[in-house]
Image 1 (tube, protein in one colour):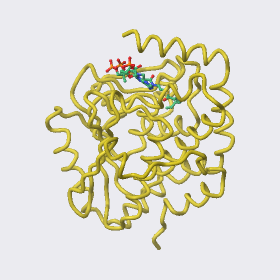
Image 2 (cartoon, rainbow, N blue to C red):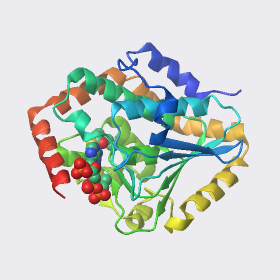
Image 3 (cartoon, rainbow, N blue to C red):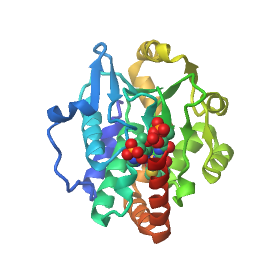
Image 4 (cartoon, rainbow, N blue to C red):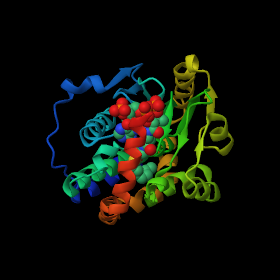
Length: 286
Ligand SMILES: CCCC/C=C/CC(=O)SCCNC(=O)CCNC(=O)[C@H](O)C(C)(C)COP(=O)(O)OP(=O)(O)OC[C@H]1O[C@@H](n2cnc3c(N)ncnc32)[C@H](O)[C@@H]1OP(=O)(O)O
């Protein structure tokens, strides 16, 4: 029996308060922010393109969520290579300006869009390969970990990891679970508690990424892996993915309201706001 993993969970989202109270602009006017290249009927390359660091604000998350829906609607499409056209950054995570001096209603919408994005990506039956051309930080790292395979450029200056704790943020349980499923409990605990950032070789050793290649081979190697995986019997691959991921996925799908409230409460805390202000200033000072 074919179980549509994505459609099994997504109606639950729709039942909740997942509607986003901000108007989406039509896709065609915003395609400068990402690019989808269909390489064949079977797979596409999806390039983020929101300089300087592909930070994720509400409008961008909504746009990306629409594109993930578009992929799901195409039954012939087996896989997506997720990468970035922004030089030296895959993604710097949530746009900090969405969290600093924010309105609770807007913050709520942002976090629901973040949840939607993770549920769509982690819960997709399709093959997602992350081709990590540059820095992979915070939510960017959670996104990469939610793909099926990660290939990263061989550049010692490129960073991957989650430093949320330095800002006073306790990473949400679905991020912890995604990391535990990737590198194991002990390494996740160390990584999140001590805000560890890795270069590609350290990340490879941990299993946070799967391969390192020179930047000129990033896409060709990703396509090579994708082509191999597209040959695996689809139904069996999909069912295996579902059986491996449904427990972790269900924990957020059935707990979205608590997760939203925790995020809003912790982000609105004056100490965290203070930290965010200082952090933003330090980023701008560089
Ligand atoms: C897993 C989820 C855990 C819980 C949820 C957390 C929410 C988050 O995701 S908060 C975001 C946390 N992200 C970070 O801490 C990354 C911060 N950015 C960086 O470390 C660096 O920018 C970089 C390594 C990604 C790139 O360094 P580079 O030297 O190339 O560029 P910069 O000069 O630092 O930045 C350029 C430009 O971009 C602004 N910026 C950087 N990151 C963000 C961001 N996340 N949100 C908004 N804006 C960001 C930075 O301030 C610079 O702006 P100006 O050009 O105006 O100076």
